[in-house]
Image 1 (cartoon, rainbow, N blue to C red):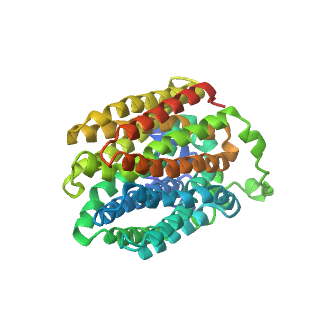
Image 2 (cartoon, one colour):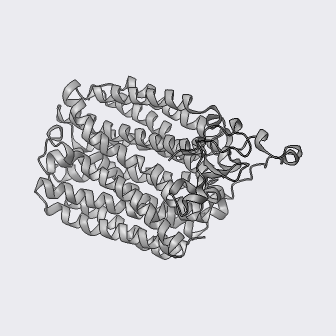
Image 3 (tube, helix red, strand yellow):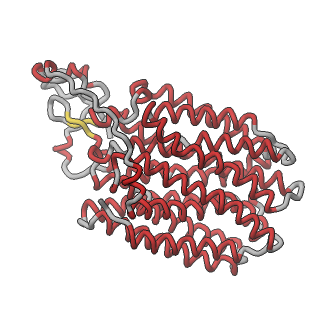
Length: 470
């Protein structure tokens, strides 16, 4: 697909070879159709800046989860080499979530005040610096925990900043494509986790666990360079051009050029009391807790489960390391497209579509989790974990987009509260898992997976009872 690159260079009545007359093509051409802007000839073009928002936000979530999974892989290898107790390991692994929990709401306020682009830049810069100074000595538990708290604070800006801007997109993208766009951006988390599980054990085997931290720092540096080179207008006001389009004043008719510019709207106060007394908002918050309890526990403890529970050496597992989070990446995007089809083409009410996906996802995950304690075969275990994470991704297409349905104007604020609840799940879940394993001598996973199953089932029931689509 070829798009217009510079409308200022076109002459009236003379189509550029870099344009497409969409009317002649007929039909829908994909998710980015709703990003097209009509130029003065009536030919629609896609803004590179608008597409760059999607790609760069996707890469931001991708890198963030490479970091999270990477630390779990590195620290598991380091701590096992000196025989660290599982409860102590859980304390270090959960320290990230203390910083992440405390920064969500303040970062949402900062994103609304200073813009998502600035906050995302600061977030990646801080994470990159900390990656370079993270120690490779497992005995330095305080310093390891401290650096993870700092990374948690830095990453607390990511989703409030992104969702603060996504709330402005809904009318531009349209309901039939919105779920797909949001799912694509957030699926970077899962692809990042998958790539980390595949690549970073090899990095650790080659250069030691501390080499993972240096690799994360280098990747973050590259992102910052690309981000700042991408588009100055995008950096100054993420989402502003999504609303106004890419048409410049020179392309407007003379009478339109003379028209006075509209006065900028002043931000309104966030109605916290109204938001926090709405049952549908609590359905989102509780399901965010349930989803992240599952994902954060598996993300932090999957390396341990592979090596202790399934007796699998991660550096030799190859594509099996990749499979669970890659399945999650695929199902995240597929479920987003399914949601769009249900809402946009089949006419299913938004609330019913969200509830359907949420229920199917969480109930499936709950059932598969109950089978995991009895599985000893490596391939069966990896497939079961993949099924759990894939089902969780389907559930996410229900609850995780719902705040953009019920409160699009305050999406960033609702997301910050919901993500704080999700982060508390990380603190509780990751730490509690270490205690449960320690109590069982580090061998039994029955209580761990049983609790995860109960959390899934509870989330499904609550969302089915309280959620709405408006």
